[in-house]
Every structure is written in C-alpha cells, then in structure tokens.
Image (tube, rainbow, N blue to C red; front, side, top):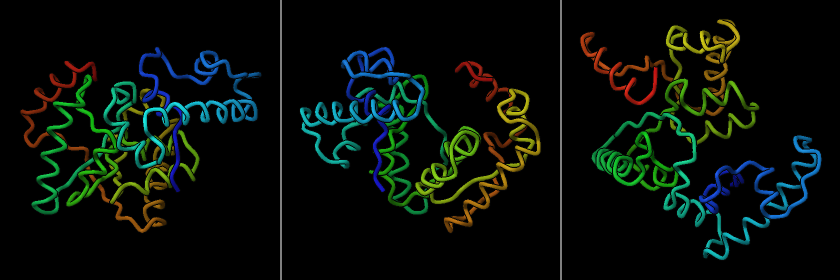
Length: 230
C-alpha cells in the first residue's frame, strides 16, 4: 500500500529549515504538541502536520502520490536524507543503458558528499536491472536492527533479491556495539533469509567485495578515508 513519510515530505517541502523534527515543525506551524514522545499525542500532532503538508504540496501542483514521488527527486531534499547502499545488476542492454544513466545522474545531479540516487529515479530507470539489498549499510539490514517485522517486510518488497554476508563481514558492528553479540548478528542474517523465503525472493550469499587484487586494498582504504569513512 502507498505510504507517505512525513519526515521526507517535510524535507522536500521545507528545505530551508535546519531540521525537520516533529516538535520543530509543530512549533513553526503553531500545531499543538503536548507530552512529546507519548505515542498518542505524537500521532495526533503528526496528523495535523500532514494536513498542513498536503495543503502546501497542493499549492505546488502536487495532488497525487505518484506526483509526489516524481517531484521529490527534483529538489535538494535528497541532501538531508541518509543514503542507503544497494546493488544494481544489469540483465540486458536496456539495463546496462539505465545503469549508466543512473551513474551519470548520481554524479552530476544528485552528488552530495557521495553519489546518490533518489528512489523516484531508481524506479524510473529500473527496467533491465536487478536491485539487491546490499550490505549492512542497506536499508533491509538496518531495518532488521531497528524496525518492526512489518516495516522490514515492506522495505524488502522493493528489492529483487536479498543479500546476506559472512558474519566476519559484519564484525565492525560488534566492535561499534551496534549489534549486541555474535548470536544476535547470526539471528539478523537468519531473519533476512527467512524474510526472503516468505516474500519468495532469492537470498544471495555475497561478500561485500570492492576490489579484485590484494594490492588494490590500499587504494580503496585511501578513497574511504578521504570520504570520512573507516
């Protein structure tokens, strides 16, 4: 079913705001928000905020869900969104052409610290491509750590196949204490496999490989370090 993320909608409609937290937007639009972080009050305030946003979207000529998707990629809202990793595989000449198109768009029109592609553009040029859920920086894996099973199922439905990798590849998550222990890590991997079976999607064992030869490791390390990574 179609959904609207009020956080992303707020970033699209009000890019000039420094942040788009619920309490910030409610204060700016004089919407009552009592006992913030209590679910029932947050839900009510979000509903009033959504009505305000839909009215502002209509003033921009956006009235339907598909129009919203088409327009969100045209603003700079993508700069405030956290990017996720995904794997794109071309299965034919059309897919190869679309892959080159997406690479060009990500570097020319949507580059912000790293190359990015709005989901609207990915859906537009999806023909001939297989989209995989990628590594621990992908939204399926992160969803498994942070979201409900229903939310993760909805996220995973976007992908053509799901990816799992050896526990050693995820070792840094244990070191950063983002995953409790190795048992919890293996449960996440197992749950992704079960989710793929439930959704009838292939589950592929991958290695998060970024270079072919051992001597290339240093070059990748330099590139990652230059981007503020580790």
